[in-house]
Length: 408
Ligand code: F3S
Image (cartoon, rainbow, N blue to C red):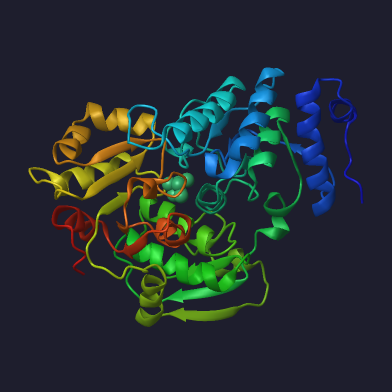
């Protein structure tokens, strides 16, 4: 079946609104035809990802600059995902890396994208509504917006999210349709989830098991928003999960009946052994000597930054250990205003802006062994950053920063 285009969309595809819009429309039409979409639907916002030099490469950078030079402009609010540099300071990353990365950011900004790069735009003003159609790339944000907010979003790639920003449209398939949002497998959680590390370990264990299916969780009673952000990231990275339900917690799953819509399902019990398997999956550390501690994946909220500031107040990061706490420009500005930034930096840590470990190259600074409280970083850093990795709660990570030792 070929996707239906209305008159305006056909004109866009024919190049009547310029070459950039035509390219964007070609991407969406190819995608829509591939997935059997019946038509394009309007989106309220887009989130471009894959903006790290690691993902774009030099060819992608030149393509983005070409699109900007040819007058490409987004027509719905469009945000940018995390990049590999911090524009506010010199972190010692190689000059050519910094230069090329900044050119990518600048090109997207020239096309009208908002000038802060982060995986949590819902923390600073870009909060979708329930039922709203959006086109966000960045898998952790896709899972969060679909599941916790009840917005409708597919796991967009960088090009398709950009194309949605340029055209204001996305193909109507996948999670935009009611029938694709029902649960597949029930997980009965019979352990107490204490913090985001526990949510991360559970997300990793289940994500690995379900692939692209929709897991439904029972007995997850009182997660915080931060817990759910980290849970989303863990599920998205370990598997191809695009959404989950938690009974009584997420808006489309107030009951089991609502979550499954009458479908048959299997039930898997989550006990301590399975949770600890999640922790083991995320730990590749051999030496207990830690030289790099990275927190904030997804980017930390103000609340999480305050927690770190409280743990560091009056203390010093050990000589030879680097502590990076990742967040974005708006949250960093608030942290500065409220004094948390000063506490972290007086202790010897760095509150980075718009960068993250996974999408940057901290390994170029010689780090060997990482401690993190992020299940997503724990999943990617061993392969992507060649770092031996210890995964645990935020207290353990700060202890590692203060002592240079993983002692859990
Ligand atoms: Fe965000 Fe980077 Fe982690 S994009 S989710 S901080 S890998």
